[in-house]
Length: 288
Image 1 (cartoon, rainbow, N blue to C red):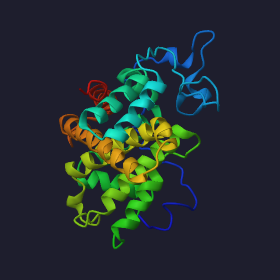
Image 2: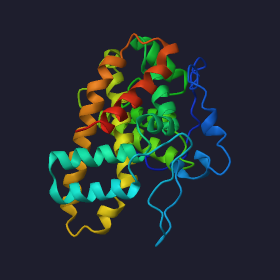
Image 3: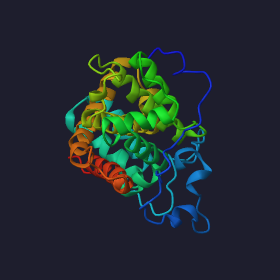
């Protein structure tokens, strides 16, 4: 975005609305919190994964309790390399499908995205309701609107909503909201001094954009290593990334309007967020 605080400066403490409970309505996730003997808790390593050891037999990120991957990380990364070299629709879809299966399937992928789900819920909570209510929430959090450029207001909103990047999962959520806010800032039609800008279109753009960026960034982070090592043409990587992003964007864009709308009740926020992630990952897992 090019604003002064977006890539540096002091980090604000996130001020959540008093009525927001990120875990309300979620099913008990005790198996993830208390793994059985001999298994590693998800939080013991970034993104619930064991780091790859150089020249070891590790095939990729280890799976948390309850995951039964039908595809190994070696196979998933091989699919990415194959898609990079062939750049056909079916090879790209296979790479996305195998990646999701290597995560343990859509249900495990959704559970693992805990910080991302929480952040998406925060976005929903702040940007749902009437324009007057939405603006009042941000003003109560200390964000000024009148007479300020939209990019400066968005920078403050980014600092308010983004999680502190204490680990890789936090960092992915942080990066996704950064990219989403940057996308909104590029829309010249949005002037946050105008009340009518706080509408359903903005809500869907923010929630959908965040989920698209998070899923894509995480996929690239986890599955592109092998392709990068064997790549002698950077344009192949860029084209592959564009193809993967188009599929993910299409999946999320097809899901968001049916689930996210301005009349969504706050008690349904968590269920809506979980559904968004789960359906998106399920469609990725079922690409043919």
